[in-house]
Image (cartoon, helix red, strand yellow):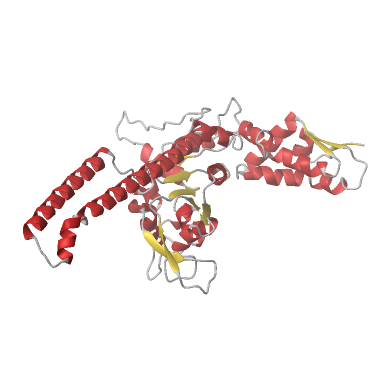
Length: 421
């Protein structure tokens, strides 16, 4: 787990607690696959040994059978010995099964606001593990028989990612993005909840582990199918669950009646849980945002059920990982520290025109503040940078400009950047 966590640190800033949870969960998942595969091989080997012993006959008995001579006493004695050996083998297998239990799978669900790094973290994790990885958008999933994607297409995407290698794909990762879009709705009249509860029920067996038939090759004309077992497939779901903080707050706020009544509102202002990147004294968030983060860290399975997920579906995701909003300090680090940071990308883009791009510290902090005002998380950094560098990227090609300096006034007040010729 520390090696997985250190690899994630190179690309992802903040969200320390989710990175630790994902590192441990993925490590335990593949350790479980290794353990169960070893148990399966040992059971198959014991079965083969048992068959060889039960199918064994002495040579003299076989020869006398070929000559038409039958010795019932010797045959009966041999069968009794084989029955005794079979009972001993069965007893040994039961003892081994008791000593080494079968390990169950623990699927993961990520809950947090948009732009906090849920999808990017899982994609980076799959890049390190070098396993088949498939992303499925749950918004397009519908119940069987309706227009849209069926739940089996989720597994078929994983098979495509593994280049139709079934054995390799059965140990891959399926990422169910926008899982909150299939919450069950309160249907009115004759309306059907096509993309809600029916989709959740269709995913139940896939999450738990079942065998389904999928097309064998890329050709759509081929009708040959292969059996795909989802027992060892790790499912990671992700969703923003907008409004979840209100559900948790209603559960946490215990109200009393009487003259000494008190309303308990456990809100820690200007403090950060271990799941976030830390405020570090930068109060770039208002109290409402900090309160939402605190309540989201108290999420439980019953809150997901209250939101609209059926209990059977939530029960198959024992690991719930909350994500928090990214503050200005973390956004500045996202701009500069990762290997593929936005500042380095735009610097390399302008360097292709022989132009050096420089940001002041005040300008970086101003970009982070503007992104927070947009309320779309780290995704807001990209839009701010595009608007900021539109005019410089228009003027630089085939010009005598050598360097561009971006200051705080350029970000906040729309001033022209400093051009060095």
